Amino acid sequence: MTLYEPVDTLKEVIAKKGPMVIAFSGGVDSSLLSLLAKETLGNQHLCILLDSPLVPQHSIEQAKKISNEFDLNFEILPFKALNKSGIVDNPKDRCYHCKKASSQLLKCYALNKGFNCIADGTNLSDLGEYRPGLAAGEEENIAHPFVDAEISKPDIRKIAKERGYDFWNLPSSSCLASRIPYNEILTEDKLKKVDKAENLLSSFGFTQGRVRLHGKGAIARIEISDKELESFLNYRKNVVSELKDLGITYITVDIEGYRSGSMDEIL
Image (cartoon, rainbow, N blue to C red):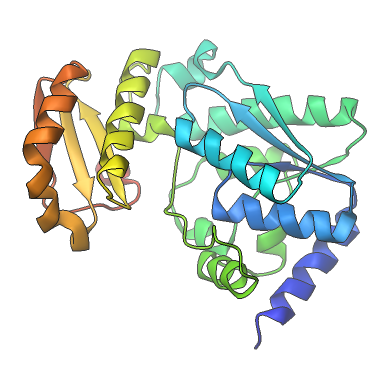
């Protein structure tokens, strides 16, 4: 099977759904979906990024960059996530409450703009992971064009690379709340600490890193990809100094390395 076959199928799915609002994050999934929606629907697409304390600052900048580069219809909509108890209390099903509230906000805004379809970048690879937000998306009738076209995350990267999009190999990004243990209250201070700490890792050239906060923000557990773990020690003193300046008391490195959703390992 060539990569053109899934692309053709995906464009057929998009065409059938018609004018579309895309939940846009600036990541590879929503970026590819947005470009194919524009290619298929022309001006009848709208990419919306929901801005909240849960969103990494680099994701916002990346979304702006991609939307400008490809002339996407793009808007940023504020989302007061920490005003909602099902999110700020950080229960195990936090993602459900967050997706529910964000989907309802998108739906209301989209309807006022004349759009009936809201789509996101969920793909086949997401279905096998712990993602309580998927249930909320289904309840709110959020469309998953990649799933309908039977396209996985590796497929998405291959298609983006084949088309020459330089975002094809962007590292995975995720909600900053995933760095805080379940049932520990989310605060802007904790989320900003995480964002600044991870930006620091990125500034040192690390392509995949997470800073998980424990002990109510006093302990940082740093995850670095296996291939970069050894070289990380060369930056140990800089990292310790910068993270202590953020108010973090103890800085640790997880020798198991980076893995997606490590906070879910206790479930």
